[in-house]
Length: 295
Image (cartoon, rainbow, N blue to C red; front, side, top):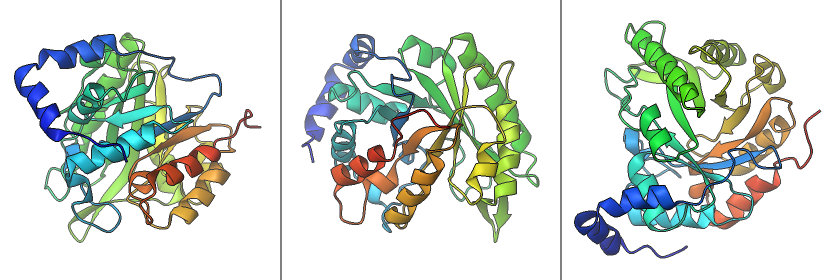
């Protein structure tokens, strides 16, 4: 792990906040998709929604120093393209110099807090299209949980559609993470059956005034070949809370061979592996990315 000095980061934020804007402006950038046509993105936008559980621990991601050290380790591994996070984490990493030459994806709607009665109403509380363009980020990501029994879902669908359109106006990629969700014993739960994921795909794919810049962030589920054929939009696979990493690696390996699946956007599975070897977990995930175009 790379050591992080929290005192120094706080001192900069207190005495020289303008340095954050300067770090955005001076960051060395790269194309969104490199020569391989694949993306390996580390996801770390969970804390912005108050979701801190990882590796069986309720507050694993609450230790910011530990999280930043794990992120630096992951981002430094060969084959890792970039980061998905909310402004506070991205700005910490900017100040640490960890995002030079990396793809940076800003998390946009983090307002649907776990356990809240308004959880399906995923308000846009992070980056917006204007700030993503101004700060030189490469894309914006949005969560779209569609609960047929929650009237607030309509507001989220409309807000995501507007965000897709506004990102496209700036020639920025919109990464939509759609789910069909339902309340089970009062808890909002994502339906991961193949038919439900397909339904979420076709709804998410059609958002906005153009789909030219839209990608999908999807779970790796059963019947993935049928699921991934529901749209021509590029797909990146998400990781989830954790579980058996070997099982996840095996599922990703198979899905990454499909024509529309173009990469991974994974956080807790790689940042908090059972043996705590972040570098090895990330290297294994990178090794799954095909080096040739899918057939």
